[in-house]
Length: 119
Ligand SMILES: [Zn+2]
Image (cartoon, rainbow, N blue to C red; front, side, top):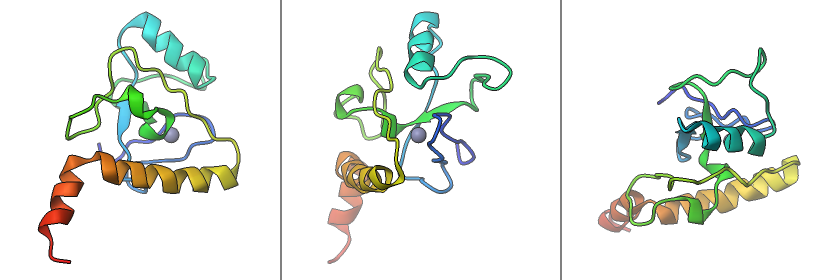
């Protein structure tokens, strides 16, 4: 999972640059898969081919409600569809900051690590 990238147009997140995000592969269910493709405004074809294990959508495109709560890793609920898309650089960086904060709060593991370490 260290070399995966988000396939949403305009989003250049990758696991190397943004390791704090989670990366989700497309659903295997054909209906849900179509919803995802529609949501990210792409069409399957020569330019965009979904490959299991190498085509991902990063966690920035999902809302808090899309994730399974109480899980230490970011897992999507079944039926979750990417719904958050940012258009401009300005809102992108603002959104990045908000999401970083959210990710830090959301990850139990990080909270545990920070409460263990001396301040
Ligand atoms: Zn993304």
